[in-house]
Each structure stands twice: as C-alpha cells, then as structure tokens.
Length: 467
Image (cartoon, rainbow, N blue to C red; front, top):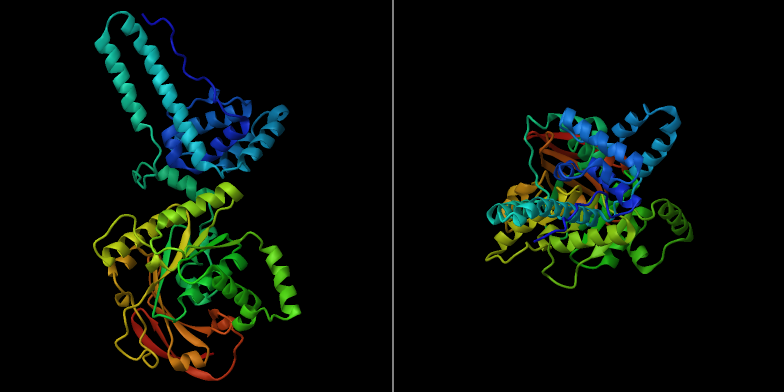
C-alpha cells in the first residue's frame, strides 16, 4: 500500500529575479504565455506585487483573449491605493528592466516545473485508486498524465486563429510603434520603397555579379543601422576575413581611402574623430567570421546569437549574412539547388525569430559585356536556385558599367517589396575607394549632369540627375 501522497509545488523554486524575468517574458511572448498560463497560479509568486501582476494578466486574458504588455500593467498599477502604489510602481519598473539574456533557460525551467506538477497531481489522484485495488483506473490516470507531460513542450509555432486573435493583434499594435521596427539604409529612395527601412522579421536580398559591391553595400547597411538607427548589428562573414570587413567599416565611418585604412596611414585628425564616434556607438556592432570551413549552417549563426546573449547580454536587431549563397542548408542535399533553397529558407526562419536580415546572392554568369551593358539585373538572373529569392521580402540588384564606375556611380534596382510598390531604379553614389554607397542627395557631388535611367512600375524614363 502506498501511504504518502506527493504534494504539487505551491511556489516557484526560484528567486524573485527569476520570477520578474518570467513575468516580463510572459508579457512579451504571447505564444509562450498561452502555454504556461494554463498551469501557473498567482500564489506561485512569492512577491505580493508579482502575484498581483500575474493575476491581472489572467483576468485580462479571460476578458480580452489577449496578453497585456508591461505598459498596460503599469497603467493599471496607478489605480492601486496610494499607500501601496509606490512600491508597486518600483517593483513593476524592475520587472520591465529584467534580464532576459537567459530566455531559453527560463522557458526550460518553467516547462520542467509544470511537468513536475502535472506528474504530482496525477500521482495524488491515482494513489487512492491504487490502494483500493483499482489498478486499471490508476493506470488510466497516470497514462493521461504522461500524455499531458509529453504535450507540455515549448516550441515556437507560427500560427494564429485569425478572427479569434483580433484582441491580441490590437494589443500588440497599440503597444508598438510601426516605424520603430524599420532599420534605415540611409538611401532616401530605397528607404521610401521599404517604408522607412528593412523591418524586423524581413529578409532583403541583393543580387549582383562578382566584384560588383555586394559586401560593400551590406557593410553600408550595417553602418547606417548603427549610426542612423542606433540598432545592434551582427555582421556574419562567410568569405574573406573578419579583418577585411572591419577595414571596410573603418573606411566608411572615417570616409577615408580604403588603402590608407588598411595600411594604417590614417591622419591623426581623422583617427581622433573616429574614436569620438566609436565611443558613442560602442557595443552596437559585432563582426563574426565563419571562414574556417565550407559547411556552416544557420545553426552556427543561432549559436553565435545565443552566445552573445548569454555572455554579454547583447542581441542584434539586424543580422547581415555576407553572403547567403555560402551558407549551407541543414541536412544533406543531392544538388546545390536543393541546398541553397534550404539555406535561404533557414535565413527566412532566422528573420522570423525577431531580426531584420540583409544578405546577397550571386547573379548568373553574364551573357553580355557587363562593363558596357546597362541592363538592370532582376530576380530571374539569380544563380543556381531561383527558389531561394522567393523567400525574400525585398529583392534588389546592384548594377554598374565601367563608365558609371569611373564616375563613382551605380544603380540599385529595387525590384520587389512585399509591403509597397517597388520596380524602381535608384541611382547612387558609389565610391569604392572609400567603400561608400549612398544616395545622391547625400553624396555632395554636384558635378556634371548625366542622363540616368529611372524605372518605375515597369516604365523607363530619361531624367537628369546630379552625380
């Protein structure tokens, strides 16, 4: 006979700091919240304020079928009686500033806690049946518990019941600034196409022939992300070296000749000005090279992001993959086409984790003389695997003839963007001695007038523009 009845846990076996992080995570991740709120109770929190906040989350969810953000909880706390209001505000401000660098560990620990409670509840219900000799009923109770334990697992599922989730969508929209997700490129015409810049969750792909500025343009996107938008940026190097990419960043930031930067022949004035700016932008940019092998996958990038979060409490908003064709798909594939299709699907999945992703792809071998042919590349010209660009939210190309290169000019063809009209050719200033590509309006180059082909919605027209 079994006489001792197991008791489910009635409080978290974790400290207050953990509980604050958990509460913040619940408000920021509705998918995770929908899994755990069915099992967690307000009395599990050892702090009165945290217990009140979690109870408010439950009541809000019951009333509106949505998870409130922290700003809504803080607003509700203003109605607490004056004697306790200050301590509530201080504690909830602490929740808002909680450390989420160990987000995956927090999720794992809570899932483990829930599973233990499911098991303990089942044991408590089955012991009486066992002692009464009702073995079949005892077995059914435990099998149901084991089934519930196996189903209680955290994995991100990109799914919603559209009509039922209107309250959650509205809560998210009211709590956020749509423009805050846009990471500007600094090229006005391109940012106009992108509705302010590439947004979190989106993948942008540039197509270009070899040696036509793929890495240079991606590096300029990185400069603008940290300088203009103050966004943490992770630049993944899959070809060349970390040092070469760092040289490019220095040349762009300093607006100095690349060869002078590379050889260390920078003037004292330029160096001191750069140091001043770098101090303001510290910890905004990480360059990470994966160049020792040829079989790196998206898992290596995920691991780098997790390491940066765990070791430095740092997470990027923008991830630059330089460049996508060099990334392998997870698994073994019979053809390079299948491999690249899988790799770009992985890149899109990475964006779905909450990052904006810029990358580039190689164009097919040219059939004409690219030094004189001014025809803009399109997505149909992508090399190896047409399907890889189908996952992109933005598709563009970098185009430059010999004459344009001599005039420090190039053309970006913004061909497709899911959220706005595109199909437009954008003339840009392209000075590869300083690794700089930027809009003509910011180039300060008012020299001769030259015809530039601008295309919009399929129609080409001649205009005069300063270069």
